[in-house]
Image 1: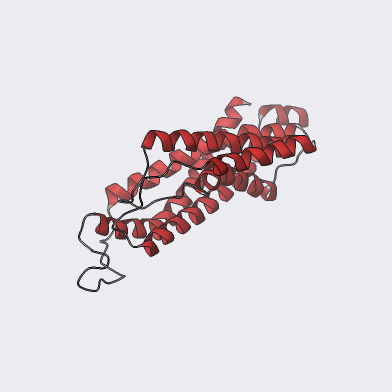
Image 2: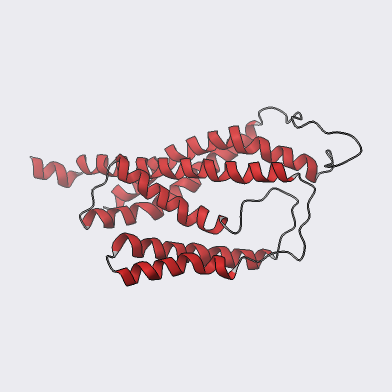
Amino acid sequence: MFTRLITSAVFAGAGAGLIAALLQLTFVQPVLLHAELYESGQLVHFGAEAVSAHPDLGGLDLMRDGLSVLFSMLLYTGYALLLLPLMAIAEQRGQSLDGKTGLIWGAIGFLVIQFAPGFTLAPEVPGVAAADVFARQFWWVGTVVAAGVAAGLIAFTRSWFAWIGAAVLLLAPHLIGAPEPESFAGPVPPEIAALFAARAFGVALVGWALLGAFAAYFWRTSAVHSPATQARSA
């Protein structure tokens, strides 16, 4: 089973990570590179002269973009190693795994890992004012853990008390609030910052949904071709 888990996670993570990386290079990276022009001072928001909203961002950088693709595939493989064991447990408890349920599992992963912390601590462009990094990381980890426990309570229990507890866990980090700087400042126009956050969330949602669908597919496929299954059918 361990080999089946690793194999399914590698294939699912590589496929979802590749597609997510291509989407990121197409939709997210141009916004990030645009923001970096303001961070470096090459462009100035509300300066003396009007600034084009469509500057030259350069072409393909094989080293940078190739590493982005590789890291995305590795990252989503790690996500798959977190997601697949939970999917396997759900299957053992009688839940079916197919493309549709895989999409749902992927959406849950997105909600736990990215949307739950991002709801209050949104993706940020370079150069914005921010609170202490350690405090932000501590809040982020706590929020992800709380959201993960809440998702587990919702998925694996049938008690109203557990579901109420899940709601409390989901709300508590945001009611407490994420660490914020003393004042907000930054050279990047807010329109670019908003577009970056929206596209980062959008690409992440697609990546997670595909990851769940691919994970379910490869998990079921590996079950068909496993020695135990072949021995039973022989």
